Amino acid sequence: MKRVAVLTSGGDCSGMNATLRAVVRAGRASGLEIIGIQKGFQGIIDRLYETLTTRSVSNILQRGGTFLQSARCKEMRTEAGLNLASENLKDLGVEGLIVIGGDGSLKGAYAIHRQGIPVIGIPASIDNDIPFTDVSLGVDTALNNIIRAVDNLKDTASSHDRAFVVEIMGRNCGYLTVVATIAAGAEYSLIPEEPYDLEQICSDLRRRYQEGRSNSIIMVAEGAGKAEDIASQIKDRIGFETRVIVLGHYQRGGSPSVYDRLLGARFGQAAIENLMINNTGKMIGIQGSSIILTDLLTVTTAGIRPINPMFPRLANQLSV
Ligand code: F6P
Image (cartoon, rainbow, N blue to C red; front, side, top):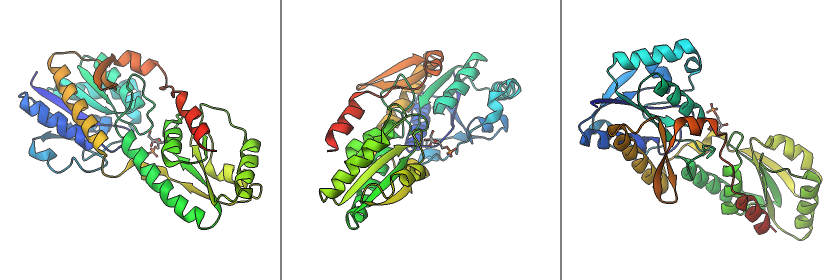
């Protein structure tokens, strides 16, 4: 194997640059030429390539986002788009492809693999909804972003006897919301995986207010409802004045945490190592402290990664 391509696809996350750096440097050390494809799968279709050297990835480790840029590519979902992408990769002499992205991107990765180009997937999404890995790239940094925001909200909330309804990203997965609830010491966590009773929440909040608590934080996963709707339903019923914040894309950016930098380094190096021995059609993951590989077919047909029920229980128990 001589020429390997790499791309970042779907929603960006912190740690993608760290992973690209590891792919390029581990690849060059193994004598490979590494081609960087810009703007995800769209860049294969539009032929947006550049050869990456060890210098191309200098000084990017600490940066959020992805220097190759990313995109959600609708064309890849069509047969014509997929065929064009595979032909372009073959024309370019690419003998292996590394795809860094979330669930949709891993589906694209598997489709390309089936067209005869050996592929390795790397799970990258703040949502932590990808199965067969304890954690995806970007999750730890996103959680740190969220708790920093909630810490700040608590300062202002407690100065005014206010409740904040905080909307957290995560698509259909409540992982970020429930883990951030525990880590930031918020009172409630509304997630798509668990039913919630707004009447009960209102009466608990009123009790907190009457006990003289100075603030309350209600975290809502985007898959469980809109913060604005929740706030309008609890407003005037809980004692606390209510404000809303949607953290949105703020959660995705920023310098990656040490955890995400290390994960990116390990994932990137493992991708090269497995491409070299033709152990492909797989996604790299982490289980405990070990790197594991799972068939892309299994990963992309398993549905979203379930939340460990210990997390909602703990969030509940600690928010008295
Ligand atoms: O999958 C990552 C994610 O940030 C989700 O949490 C969110 O629902 C979505 O992407 C937002 O997508 P976009 O960046 O296209 O607005």
